[in-house]
Length: 223
Image 1 (cartoon, helix red, strand yellow):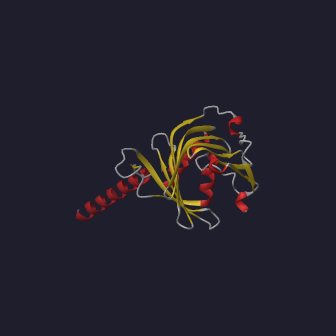
Image 2 (tube, one colour):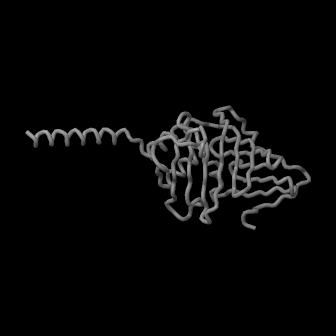
Image 3 (cartoon, helix red, strand yellow):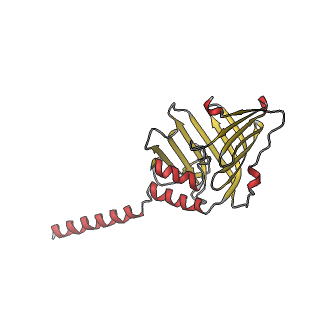
C-alpha cells in the first residue's frame, strides 16, 4: 500500500511539473510573438532618446518598411539622420557638415532594429534568453513601467554588437528600449516612446535637402 501511494504521488508530481513546464514561455517563443507583431507594421513614428556613454540625444523618429529611417533631433537642435534605403545622411549643424555614405552591401540597410527586418536579422545572428525570467520587470529601478526583457548574444564575431538587450512592452509587444554593447564594451541605448504605428507616412518624408551652405563629405565611414 505504501509503495502504491508513493508511486501515485510521484506520478502526480511529474504530471504537475510537466503541465507547469508547458506553460512556461521561452525567450524564443516570446521573440516570435514580437516578430509577428512587427510583421503587421508598415510604418511608425514617435520619440527617441539615444544614449552613448554620457551623451544623450533626443528627437522625433520616423520609420517606413523596409528600411526608410529619419530622426529629426531637438537635441542637438536641427541635427538630422536619414537613411533612404541606399544612402546614409547625417547633417551636423554645428559644423555645417553633411556626411553621406552609400550603403551598398555594407549592411547599413539594417537601419532600424525595431522593425520586421531588424528582428529577422537578430533571429539569424543572435541567441536569445530571458534576462532573469519570463515575468515583467521594471524598465528602470523604481520605475512603474513594466517590460519583458530579453538578452541576445551574437553567434558570430562579425556582428557589430556583442550583446543586445531588448525591453518590450508586454501589452503592445512593441520594443520600448534597445541596448547594445560593442566589442569595446561601449553601451548604446535607444529609448522609443509614444510610438504610433501604421500612420501612412509618405515616402517623401525621407527626402532631405541640406542647407546650401553646408559642406558635403562623401563615404565618411571609410575616411
